[in-house]
Length: 349
Image (cartoon, rainbow, N blue to C red):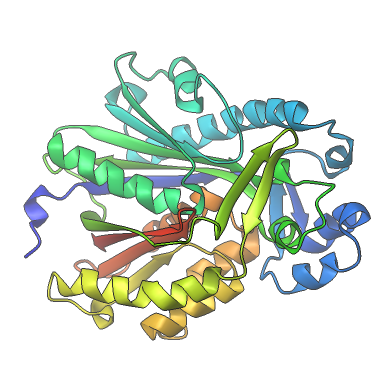
């Protein structure tokens, strides 16, 4: 049985983007000078029509290296992070000083102090706010961050927490890397940030309850996805086996997780799925035998914004909060990422 009385609730989600929005054709034309003509083939199959970029298109070919790219990351990430936090607070009708904990995640830049620490004074968060920065989770971090907020708020049901995810994927593009992995990543990923506010069970919230979560790390898959980090910055590791791993493990993971509560995939009315890419989306549909329209919002997020890494699944969550399903219906948030791993979060509207 699920103890809904102890379940925290999601109060609001907000997504913000850099001001530079371009069609896929514009981005590909600007990057083709280093990527070569084969780049167009990957771009055409990406499922992406538009992307937001941290910098003007013409500046990317002039970046001198990792130091300049990371300096740009810090400047733009702080702006997007601040806007996402303020938007989520406004949507939840919560003052900044009401936040008790902030979970933050990013995998596309390095900053110490972390983004959340630098935003405390800018936004007016309390100096005693508890900070939980997370690095290295990549695409899975949006769902994992919601799951960790759930863990925290079950221990502190009177408190309010926020998850901040900011990813500027375009600043990691390696202009001297002509590997298939880099070409795929350069045609797929976009830039943006998201914030999700959740409140403990003792708070009154009109939003989906976080009923349970499940983490899963898969054996012998460390080289499926991640970064090789060196002098040039972040070099993408992205295996063609990602859809295969999803097909091998995800269906069983979801079924076993739901079975613990006497549920099946047919009981889930809303699928909040990370848009990893067209082949990954198709793999998820196939292994879970989902209806044709089940992942429409996932595909819409990919089409309109590209893959935002950790922020993408939160963009899909935001869309479902804006047009919620019927009260009492169940939802499943899920994402996969470096490790290789998955995170499942069971919701009830």
